[in-house]
Amino acid sequence: MPHSQLRIVIVGHVDHGKSTLIGRLLNDTGSLPDGKVEQVREMSRKRGMPFEWAFVMDALQAERDQGITIDTTQIHFKTRQRPYVIIDAPGHTEFLKNMVTGASQADAALLVIDADEGALEQSRRHAFLLHLLGVRQVAVVVNKMDKVEFSSRRYEAVAQEIKDYLAELGLQPRAVIPVSARNGDNIVTRSELSDWYLGPTVIEQLDAFRPQQTSPDQPLRLPLQDVYKPDDRRILAGRIESGRLRVGDTLHFSPTGASAKVVSIEAWNHPETVLSAQAGQSIGITLDKRIFAERGHIAHHQADAPTLAHRLSVRLFWLVSDPLVVGKTYTLKIATAEHRVTVEQVTAVIDVEDLSSTPGKAVRRNEVAEVVLRSRSPIALDLASDLPRTGRGALIDGNDVVGGCLVVEIEDAAAANI
Ligand code: GDP
Image 1: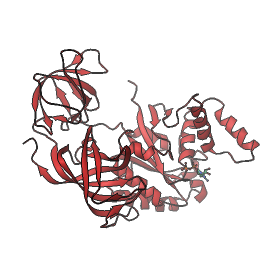
Image 2: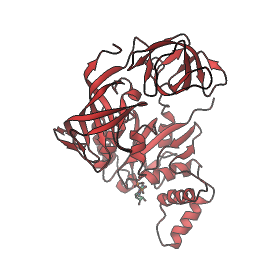
Image 3: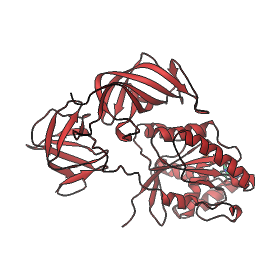
Image 4: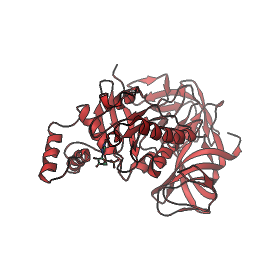
């Protein structure tokens, strides 16, 4: 059976070598259009500039802008194991927004760190974002090892520092790989220059990652996207974010408390109706009776209901130049629901360098904070640590995504489905 595609992101401080690594991965797996590298080499030579893998990426981008070939915001390559998609080009302005809103869901991440410079503020901020976004499979790529003569001591120092930082976020890297992206060491082929390193190459580590699976044994969460009435039927449609459901199950809906039995399930990728469906599938269901249900409501089983909350503590990442301020009202989008929320308190602004925190009144661009939000209407949600897909949200101001957040605590939980 062919392995399904793995979605990865490549993050790290500017100039630490992300584009170079991507160029290498594409080249060394034979995924670039024929002649592209030679063409860019020749162009660089004519202009008297050293060849850069980033130019290859730029050339592909230019072709895309002319509508010709490759979409570099979705870069594809293949190993013998499986196809990959790099879901956003580094430096792309929409990158953080897409990740924060869940528009791009990564299965795994590579965090690139310059061996000479070590982890800088942006490296830590990106590591923090991976934690915030729930990307659990992370490998660190210690790049530019050629600049430090493949010194194992330098590698150890950089590796230890970033491992300590990640450990504080509850993240354990699957591997810390010493590479030279420019020269191709330990990307696809093992380098003779690092005989002291026994771990995987970048490609071996990528192939060892698993598609992020939400276990069907988790509580069922089916946030409704739409309700359709194609004929005399009424179909409730949505994507199962966790758990599974079967024909005959009694479903409960939050926040309304309505309930009904599942009569049929249609999976969009399946020609006939099915008897059960699970996390990751987009489905439509019909029910045995007519209940009030609309976009934003979450279907679940009675035993494992989401919490209904009016006050919640979130860990927040702020994206825009207008700061978040206490007393202001935003729209919180969580799964398919939207609620008006007011910022009640900024409990702590977190310093991403050392993860220390201080109380504050505002949160500025690129800052991380713990914030208490209050909503008049009850919000059906989960703690991000329990169920990330229904425990993560985006804050919206007008039409702009201004922040991303994880639900870390429910401050005032009304009992579910009273
Ligand atoms: P990005 O901003 O993270 O995408 O970084 P780039 O890939 O554009 O690389 C920034 C600079 O570092 C470029 O001049 C690259 O040639 C250089 N660079 C990248 N990888 C290596 C490497 O393995 N060794 C050395 N010596 N330089 C590298």
